[in-house]
Length: 344
Ligand code: PHE
Image (cartoon, rainbow, N blue to C red; front, side, top):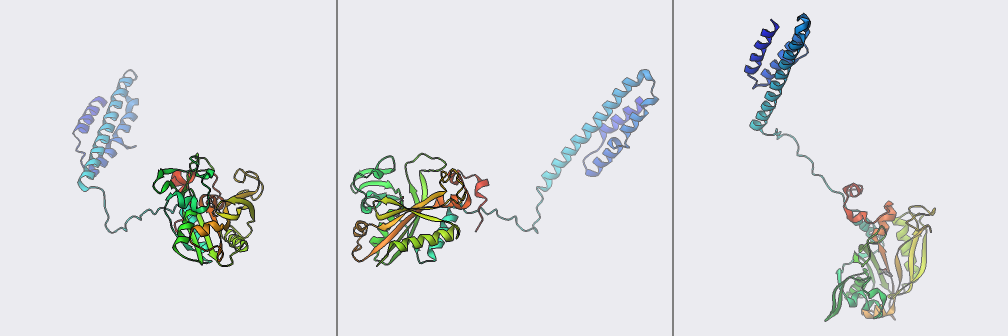
C-alpha cells in the first residue's frame, strides 16, 4: 500500500545521517530531485481510488514538506559547522588587497596649479597666521580707523580691544604682504596662499571660510604694465589662451590705483548664466599698485621702490575651471563629488 511505503520513508527521513556534504547530496537526489521518490509517489496518485485521492495527496504533501525541511535544516547546520572549524578561507599566496587611495581635494589641487603658474615666473611661496592682529589685517594696509570692513558684519573677532588691539580671523591674505615686507627688502616676488574668514551667510556663491592667493611684487620701477602682463600670463596659462581679461577700476585702501580682474565666463562663454549674472564676465580677484603708505608701514622706502599686489579666490578659480556651480560642494565632503578629481 502506498500509505505504508510513505510511513517507511518518513522514518527513513527522520533517521537520515546528514552531517556530510555527500550525505546531503545523496538525500537530495533520493527524495527531492526531479526523478526522486517524492515526485515518483505523486505520479502514482492516479492509481489511488478517486475517493481516497484527496487524503493521499495530503499525505504526500506532508512527506514532501518533511523531506524539504530536514534537508534545509541539515544543510544550514553543516555550513555553520564548516565555517566554525576552518574560519574564513585565507590564501597567503595572494597579493594583499590594494589600499584605496583618496583623491586630492579639489581646492588643494587648484591652489597648487595656480601656484605652479606663478612659480614659473619667479614667485616664491610665503606663509602667515590665520589669527591676525588688527594692525596687520587693517591698519598697516591703510584702512582708516572707521573703515566699514573692520565692522562686525564682515570680521570675526577673536578678541576685542586687547592690549595690542583687536585680534581677528584674517579677512584676506593681504596681511601676509606686510609680514613679508617687514622681513626683507626688495626685490620681493611672493605668493601667499591661505584660508580667510568673513562673517557671511553661506550660499551657492558665498562662504564664511574660503581661500585666497595673494601676490606681491616689489622692486625698482615696477609699473602697472608689469601687473597687467603678469595677470594676463596667469589667466592664459591657468584657464586657456582664449580667455579674455578685463581690468575694472576699483578701490582698495592698500593699492592705488586699484583694479578688479574679470575674465570671460568659462561656464557660458558669454551666453549668460547665473555664475556671471548674465554679463559674460566673472571677477577672479582684486589688484593694484601697492599704496606708498603700505610700503612705508612695512619699512620699505616708497621713493625708491614700487610694486603691485593681487589677491585671487581659489574657490572661484576652481569653480570656473571645473564648472562647479555651488561652492558649498567644496565643504560637504560628498565622496561622489570629491572622487572626480584626479589623484596626483
Ligand atoms: N585683499 C583684497 C580682498 O580680499 C584683494 C586684493 C589683494 C586687492 C591685493 C588688491 C591687492 O578682496
